[in-house]
Length: 301
Image 1 (cartoon, rainbow, N blue to C red):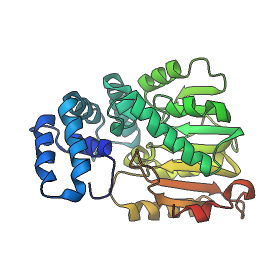
Image 2 (spheres, rainbow, N blue to C red):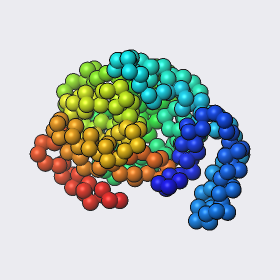
Image 3 (tube, rainbow, N blue to C red):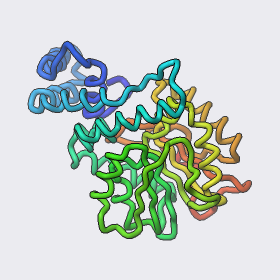
Image 4 (cartoon, helix red, strand yellow):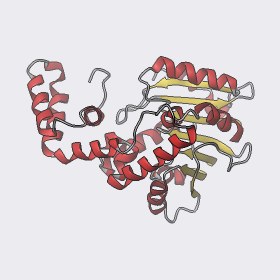
């Protein structure tokens, strides 16, 4: 609870930490016992306990969904082998719970996922990321939640994912949206796309897996290649290493190496999701005046 995360994110963290040996009802009692010790946190503790006691299925759903995707790399695994294993894991996670497979703190609830998605979309809007003339590439599109949410405010959206199951779910979700294209991808590069073909690139919770697979630098180079001059890239979560300083250092190093400017630097701007936000501009020496003049002032918000 120390970093102010919402109760749903706290429950998701607990589910990942306690894979076995403790159930939702026991954790609910722990939370209620803590209430008497810390009055300042009473409301959040009581809400955590209420969720755990009245929806004990949430805990097992999150455990099973989270366990489907292993976040460690074996020494003998190649980059491509890691990607293949992750693809299989995401297939299994999506079969267990489509909503939880893309955001555990949704608790598998489509309404909670939609609310968190809308919050992210509103943030993108404030950054000048969205526009009726924009062609957007979504790396790791998952079940197509951003394609559905952005289809009315973009020219075209192309979503790619390594999980065939997730692409299938996304195609059902986005059926009838003529400006949405969904493609399976190797996860190794963006070779399917030509130079300067997108105004914006979105990557929500996909870079942590590129970091795990040793492909983050390659994708930075690829993003810089497919972006138009002064195009924007939103990386929401860079890694799961638990070091914001290390993430910022890597993002700045890679941005400089590939001709990009960091204008939002690892902030936590969301209430319903605990992700870190990076926003970058494909540099031509100046920032795009229409959309980016206020970005530096927004960094502290």
